[in-house]
Length: 248
Image 1 (cartoon, helix red, strand yellow):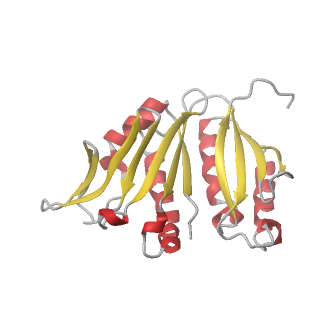
Image 2 (cartoon, one colour; image 1 turned 180 degrees about the vertical axis):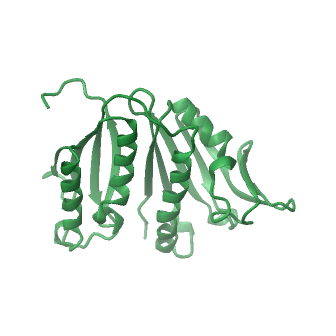
Image 3 (cartoon, helix red, strand yellow; image 1 turned 120 degrees about the horizontal axis):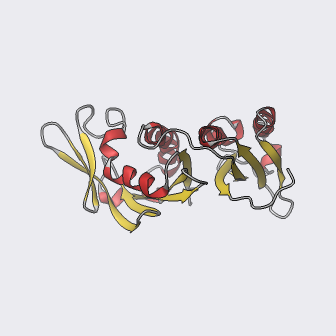
């Protein structure tokens, strides 16, 4: 049985080339190694050529994964098996897409869960883990900050792994999604939202933020504060939208 990909996103206040280089070249400066590493506090992690390697204070090393695809400064993909053998390697891919002047939307997609003994449990563990990791990355001074200019986004919602056979609207968690949309409305960020009649279980929300700081929080909130997304009823994909004509 296949397990759905896991997607996590953050917005950073820099151009894609800076965001990409900071992820690749400075991973050891922001990765939460004490809690999400093989050897604990005092160890380091770095891209060593095509390999991602953690090094303990006593010199021991652990291979976390191997780069399988790289298109600087837009995309990077690598196998992923910290603390496990390569036979249990999943796949992580990141994209770095400009989201207006001085901002980049970083999207991480984790797939290949079927190689793990308990695929669903493995996905569940990383659901929170990647939030922590990308949060540390996005909060680093090198990529955090502000950039002026309004940002627009499309929030694409689809049925998640916890959606019941009767559909997302039958779930007691669906009202949490409506509550989140009302919160966006109260902030003045909601432009429009609703289901897609030709794709049952799917919907779309148009939102806007006044600047890069507000936009970064909007991206995090779409994953963190929407109770239906947090419960797995819905999956959300945030997409930057370059608006060229609007009457709003």
